[in-house]
Every structure is written in structure tokens, then in C-alpha cells.
Length: 581
Image (tube, rainbow, N blue to C red; front, side, top):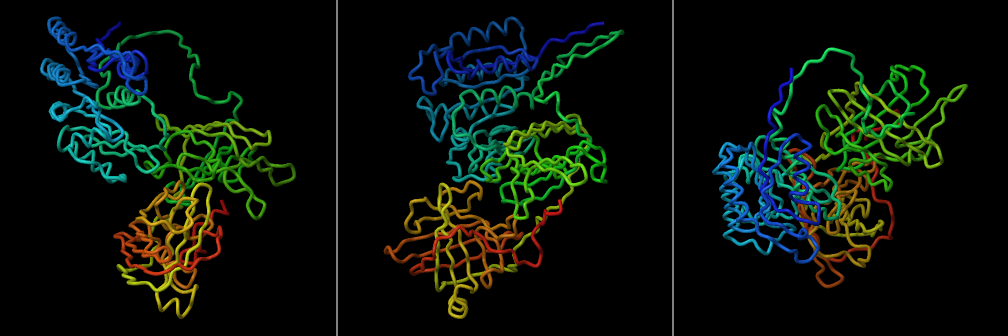
């Protein structure tokens, strides 16, 4: 028996560019391989896309589009989805409106192409924006980028934008225009993100690559957005067969055919261990099934890696984790193996037992591994090397759990807001890094400075400035990330893995930490070249947060330049200790 149903049809109202993989050139093949029949309705034909090839040759498609829609109506065609993109003016917007009128039950997706990089395209007028806003109100899903979101809402976007602001932007668009919204191209510090609202609310972010890739929005709309909201659905056939059956392995997984097949794995989740921007995991994989209970093994692979925010039951995000060669603890990377002070290896490594006891350890400094989950089963595989000619490939498939050894409780000992008033003395040192300089500024009250000097209670600020800054730069410093700090930001306070308190802190008696300051502003003004005015309004890591405010006016005592960026941890709770793992 064989029963075949007609594939779903999507009417694609977009431009067609001859050179440059974008618009219909991207959308048509993607929808086809998804089992969907795309029907192209070019709004305009261009010799090239508009991203750097000069002024393209142009052929307007309005007359053709009108005739095509009438022809489809006469044929009695129906469309399951109408997906609109670039519309070159109000006449082309009318094409989309006519399609919506002719097939009112179709799922309607609108990509309101009007601008990018903070500016509207030159052909976009206030009347066209109003027309596009009207079209969005008729849609089931809209896909504006950040610039287009601002045009639709008639307001500038917050700068800088954080995750909460990105989610609020998507929510506002959903309330004003369409029931489902995905905003793309949102710049969140070093990340590029998209935010959704409606049926699902989310913010997804990845590290930003500072390059232009024309057609990625079209690919996103065709693949992710349509697949998530409208699928091939009933495109299926039914049949019966009775006889022998064999399968040929045609998978394209990059697994070495000689990889060691591991039988056991377990892990530990440590939360923010190295820096506030990444979540730390430690994964151990053995070629024996009961690794945790002491079964003999031939290979033990220990992977120290960082994920973005955990998913599900404290699990890391799926993906491929390369070596973090610069050791800046980027999410989505693996910590390389390195010698510690006891001549052991910290970070990622693999070990092989030696005859007579002990083991040989190989620090992992090259390669990557992949963390994936399919049908509830975890798949781990990769090829790793130590840079000295030794290499290991492995694969594991089975159950996996991560013990939760994180401590996300607040560190701050503040019990209420604190106003420090006008501070008495200031000291500062420059601490050079590779492409920026950290200015550590220490501010003291009169009582602490006159009674204890530099060992007295103080506020320690860490401000990020250009490497060529000969004096503390003026400006307003807001919080920045610690692994790729932005110039003009301050480093938030946090506890590093080796028990140092790094970043901006309120400190008692030189080394006893009181509160990490993780948000707010520090404003620096150079009043006459020798004297400064510093004002701060900062908050700690408590929930709800406590405010720390105050100011300083006067000269700043210079301290000898050093690379010592942190204080020793001396709170009542010890910092995490991973030596036993």
C-alpha cells in the first residue's frame, strides 16, 4: 500500500539577487530540502545584492507579481504559508497585502526589511514604515532585526542592551504588532543575540564574529523560524514491506573510526568558577563502565570546559568545544591542560596507567570535543592532542549526570544600602594587560586612612582604559565582562578559581572582602590635570541588591605598577576547591 500526500506550499515574496547568496537564492533550496514546496514571487530582480557591489541593475516585479497572484487564484492554488521579505516600496507592499487577502488562512511570516546597522535604507519613507507596520499587524510571526524593531516601535533602542532589555524589546513588539516575534541581530556586549516573544519567550546569544554575512537572515527565516512555526506537517507516505533489511552507515559525524570506545562518564557542575560570564563543567570519561567505583581503566579523559547558561538539570549546552588557547574562559571553550605548582596538571588532560602503578598524564592543548544529545542519549566524541605528537580520539554514548557543586549564593556581607559620603584619600596603580590597562583605584575614608593607612578599609575600583593612557581617563564607567573587557568599563567583583577576589570590591583591613560590586556606574572627571572627582553608585550581588554610593575629590597617589590583580579570599565560606577531582 502506498499513500502520498501533497507537500505544503509556501509563497515566498522576496527579492532575487543574481550575485550574492541571499533572499530567494537561499530560501528556495532550504525550504525544498525541508520537504516544503516553495513558490517564488520576486518583488524585484537585482544583478547583485546591495552589500558592497555598487549600484545593481534593477527590474521591478510589481506587474509580474500582480499577474502571478491572479494566475494562482484562477488555478485554485492554496498556500499554507506566505513568507514576505524585501519590499521595494508601497506598491510592492500592496502585493503582500493582496496575497494575505487571497489566502487569509495561510500562516503569515513577515520579515520587515527596512534597514540595518542602526540606519534605515535610503528608499524607506515614513509612509512605507507605516505600511510595513500595518502588514506586521496581519502577520502570525515577524522577524525584524534590531534596526527594524526600532523603526516599527518609533523609538531608539537602549544602548548598551542587555538580556533583560532584549527580552523586553521582543515582548513590546509582540504586544503592539504580532502574536509571535523574533528580533535578530541584537548586540549584547561581545555577543550577537536574538530574542523571541509570543508562543515562546527566549534570548539566545552566541559570540559575535565581526564580519558581514549577507543572506544569514534569509537562511534563519527559512530554516529556523518557519521550521519552528510551520512544518511540512502531513507530507508523508504510508507503506508496508516484509523482507530482509540492512542499513548502510552514511552519517557525516566526524568520529575517528579508530576512536577509543568509552563506556562510562560522569561530571561536575561548578557554576561561575573562573569568571562571571561562563559556567564551568568538569567531565571525566573512561573506557570502563564503572569508572567512579574504581574499575581498572586503560584511558581516562578529563575535560574542563565552559558553557553559556545551563539547560535543563544543570546540563551544559550542546555544541563543539575547542581549546581556549588564550585562556580567557570564553563560553563554548575547553580549558587547556597546564602544569600547576605541584607539577600536576590542571585543566584538561588524559591519562594512561603505568605498569607497577601510577599513570602518565598528557595535557590537552589542541583539538576539540563535541557534546550532543539525541533521543535522550548523550553522545560525546572528539580528537585531542598535547602538542608533542601524542593524540587520542574517543567516543562515548550513554547516560550522563553532572553533580551540582556550585555555590551561587551571594558573597556580599552588606545588610543594607551604604552611603560612604565624601572619601578622604585615593591611591591608584596601572596594571597592563595585552590590549588594555586596568586602573586599580583605592578610595579610603578619613578614619581608615588616618588610623591604618593603606591597610585600612577601602573601596577598590578596577577601571578598564586604553594601554596608552598616561592618566586616569575621564568618563562614566559601567560594568563590563571580565574575559573581554570593554574600554570605559569597570570589572565586576568575583571570586576566581585560585581564591583571589578579582574586580571591584568593598574591602576591610586590606584583604578581608566585604562585598563584590557587580553593577552600577563610576564617573571620573579630571578637574585640572592633577585633581579628580570620582562619583560611584554601585550594587552588590545580594538579592535584592544593596547600593554603595559616595564620591572623592582631590589628587590621586600613584602606586608602583604591578600585575597583582587580586586579593586573597578570607570569607567565612571557603572558595571552591577542585584539587580532589
